[in-house]
Each structure stands twice: as C-alpha cells, then as structure tokens.
Image (tube, rainbow, N blue to C red; front, top):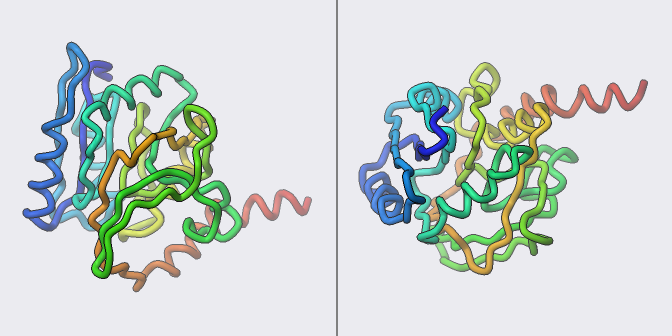
Length: 224
C-alpha cells in the first residue's frame, strides 16, 4: 500500500455531476509528497461491485468512496483525513453517522451525529445532525455519501447487489475487524450533498438481508 497516496472513488452515471465532483476534488490541498488518484466506475451493477472493482485497481493506502453528487468544500480535507488516520484503530471516517443503527437497520431512525450541507428537490439547508463529542466520535455506521478508509476490506457484493445498505454493511465489516468507524468534529460542514429523490424500491428487501447477516445472529447469541 502506498502511504503517500489518496484515491477518490465514485460510481457515476451522470457526466455533469461527475465532472463537478471531480472539480472540487482537484482543488483540495495535498500534503507534501502526496499523490492524488481518481477512479470513476461507470456502468456498475451495484455500489459494492463498483467499489470492489476500484479498490482492487488502486494501491493507495487512503481511499475515499463518495457519491457523484457530493462536493467536498474543505480545502484541507485530505490533511484532516490523513491526520485522523494516524490512529491505526480508526478504520473508516464518514461525515454523518448513526449511534443506534443496530436497533432497526435504518440509519435515519436512530440518533445521528455530524454536519452537512444538503440540497434536495424541494429545499436546500445546512444540518447539524448531532454534536460530535471531542475530536471525533465512534459510531455504528456512517452514511455512504462519503466513506474514507485506510484499510482495504472487501465490500459485500455477495449480499448487497443494488444501491442500498452497502454503507451500513461496510461499517459493520470494519467493526467486525476491530476497527473504529468515526465521524470527526467539524466547525462547519465539509461537504455538500446535492441529493435528489429517494428511491426505496429495493430498500426494504435489502434491509432484510442486512438484519439477517448482522443483527439476527447477535440476538440469537444473546438468548443463549
């Protein structure tokens, strides 16, 4: 793994979004001696398959998986990510995280922390989902809008073959390996998420897969 390299990875199907996302990434300041790489996967059959494909292509120690409609505003973003990853126990960093996802498998039902600028079809606003206590706060899962890692753990494309639950699943996989999943303290949002309408067509079917893999086993063990 190249410890002087950061790779930004996205699955894309819209050139306008893709190009705008890249333009923000190109403006980010690089630490001395660092190399920046960008991998765009087009035509992926699922988020997990696209992310696995890109992960295998890059030797970068630091990888940032983000949506094509996420625009990173903080010019020192890379510096901040690398500094936090000086702690080898931190495996993944997100902008918004949930403290209680294991109760339902639905991230927005539980208490969340983090900050974000968000645009939707109907409105645009800035959100403080919850204060991060200290320099960073450990969470059960982070939102897939942006997920930064310093270790390569395969995405579960054997389970999640669409566009839902890849983020909560990957958070659980990192925690299974003993790594912390965190949201950093920020004084202002580091990103804009130019989000559109939610498509929940396959969401609840994927939720059942998530619950069976990550939650039901724990409940059974607790009953023993």
